[in-house]
Image 1 (cartoon, one colour):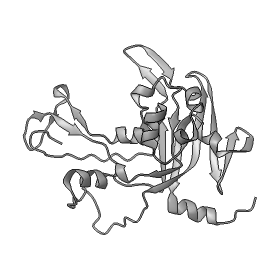
Image 2 (cartoon, helix red, strand yellow):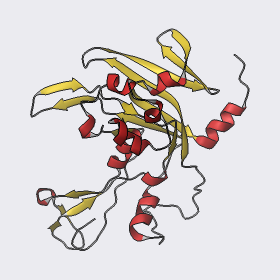
Image 3 (cartoon, one colour):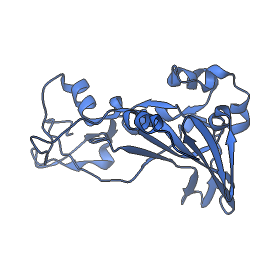
Length: 237
């Protein structure tokens, strides 16, 4: 959005997953420190306040940073089609349409060309088992900025169905242990309200708290209504 005239240019970027940066002030926070926190720190009642109280990053905090408006400075001016000159602008990311399964990728491999170094970021990340994606939708962000007026998106179909729920449930977590040049991936998978650890050829049942303490690298959330429909069905073992 042009800071001079308010002209807005929108770009749509289809994606398979959403890559999120860890909160910068928590880069040095380790999994060991997170393991010593009490149950309220790992709970789901208020992930943002939990982050402040326990000193750990949260998935909600990462999503808020991802969708936060960013003012681009004078060295990053964009050409405004309405002003016909380069102007300072406001840039903001948002999610236009939710999928049935939302995948979040945490940027744990850091590469710096200025410092000429690469490293693995071992910071602990709190992730909720239930996630409401409403605050990060384009429609919600526009409504908070302009009120309840209707703003059609470019290319929207007038009669396109919009019955997908914004409530999601966690059903899989991929973790990475080790360093940048060598490591091991383990997946925690939820099936019929029971968590399983998938480690190469070994699959074992684990407690929910083991999943909460895991160093999340990728988190998969399924639409809540779809998840509960699936768990209602009895699956033979």
